[in-house]
Length: 342
Length: 254
Image (spheres, rainbow over the protein chains, first blue to last red):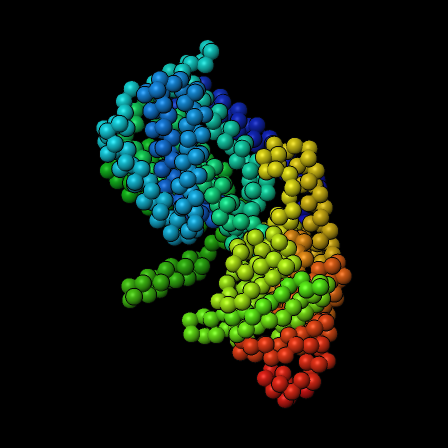
């Protein structure tokens, strides 16, 4: 029986605190050590990817699988852009407004979507993101398929002007850290526990008085609003948005960040997945034509043989032996044969 | 006083009549047994009381309020707890976390206060932890508290299921086969636990196949057969009732 005594607990928490401080220091010093603007750009994309991956994980923690993580990312990007370019608001006024508008919209759509958990929800979110993309493309007012150009960068805050990649990095890092702190608090509160309960056993959660619908809706609203916040930053960082940027593949990638890092690690999983999925394909560009094939193969191997993701595999290393591998391949062959028959 | 009133419940699945015009009462602080051969409709009735199914006809009153038609979680918040026949736990969580989840409906402080760790919210969290530890001690699960629910032996999973239900502080507890599959000593201690639960003021409605357990535990027994209430009475009356013996117990048992 594994019973943690108090000294190991405090040592663990001290280790954790140390790791957090080191990680923070690295994240803050990193752009100062890097010359290349291109790498800084990738770091910014890692932060955005992490945020989006975390929104996927939040819905997953409540037992919902979304293929539309990019939907409210697009909503946030377009809302903020319109507020700034059409109404002439400053970025810092548009940001909270975007959050409020996205929260209200996601509450409205979520109220319909989360009525169906399971496969229905997956399909609905998949369609929803396409609807958003097509709507943005068809509506002239939103710039049509050509998108919107020349979106201003975030207005300067005192001496900080968000012109350089470095300053933009610090802005998105601050947003990311704020989200991490909030998400961490939510996961360790009774809300996070209720989500877990709904995911692990909806029936048991129900008999304990947990309203699955309301808690799932809450996860949807928080996740969507967070994605909108990331979208708001994205629009003003890239300075142009097109509907195509939010189309199908992005949502799939976001999901891969979470799966690759480790589905059960709601914060660190997407972060690690995002780092790998951002940097590895970039360096595979040397062999550009076959880059998607290699990336795809790598993912296939990880999902098939390390379903816990990277962190899950580190935490519970599988005792790999050849017979196990063989039987696993055999099972796959059998299930494939059965699939062919039917 | 009747805590739960089952009134003329009829439930039809497709062409199959699972329950036909079943009525009975469960009084406060009673232990009532619900028995009958397989397919008698016992589990269907449990599912109707806890809101998983809705009856085609009839009403269910709990504390004089009609509850059929309400959502599962709503019924739970009114004070009806249940355990399922098949082990239904939060398998990937520890025993302690399972019980904490059971306490969910008794949190009073606003959720945002918990996020900000206000003193009030922290105090509440600590109270809940103490309460969970108390329940674990009562159910003799303390030594297993950091074990994953999935790793518990079958008998202990049953005990944990009851601990979770107790954490939600029900006034009425529905137990679906609490001792089935247990060995005699586990059964005896479970019976003792159920008695103690009743002494805490919880009313218990129990479905069980283990006749010896039912007879020794229940104040009153209701026998269902093929969806119809056959007879109702004290264990002694049930033991000697011709119809029950014929329909259910079989000649070799008595």
